[in-house]
Image 1 (cartoon, rainbow, N blue to C red):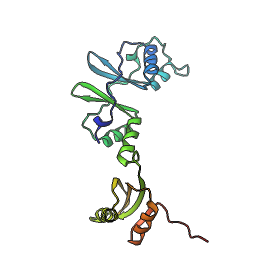
Image 2: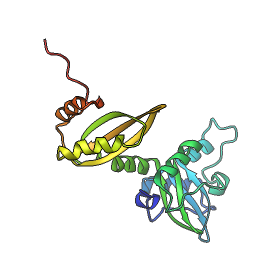
Image 3: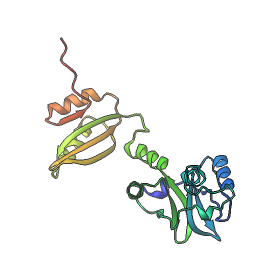
Image 4: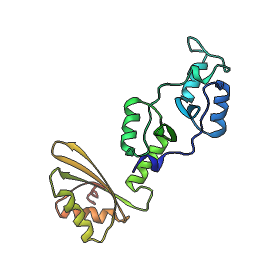
Length: 209
């Protein structure tokens, strides 16, 4: 999944000479929290609702008037993404820099904007959680053929895999989170255990007394 698949477009923007009052009103009317600042087609910076609150707060050392300009408060230069960037690269950059959005620029043209909510939507889509599905989590040895062996199990049982997310847990061990097109995951989990797989979810049923 690429940034272009989840970004918002067209983008609500504001000019650098607009007042903070106008920016606040625009955010409220459009239901957005981030405004790319554009002049003559060029991206100059970005203004967030947090920037507005901080700049005009009475707790600020030098609180600004609502008539102050966007240019005085905006963040510049601004970090951007490319439409062709993998969505996980955008997520990593936003996490590392602790920012809530990235304007999406192609060449010098502003094409869209991606926010934290867009990344959550991407996660839901990538995991297949937006489809009627069951969840199975299996711990595998980190060596060639193990994931293929797991996939063969589901193929043999006529169960389609919607998505697979894998991540290393410790050296030599990988967790695999699968979304499958069956809600009957407990019987599948029991069959997996019989085949020697270490199933983490769903958990085994407690012994009945």
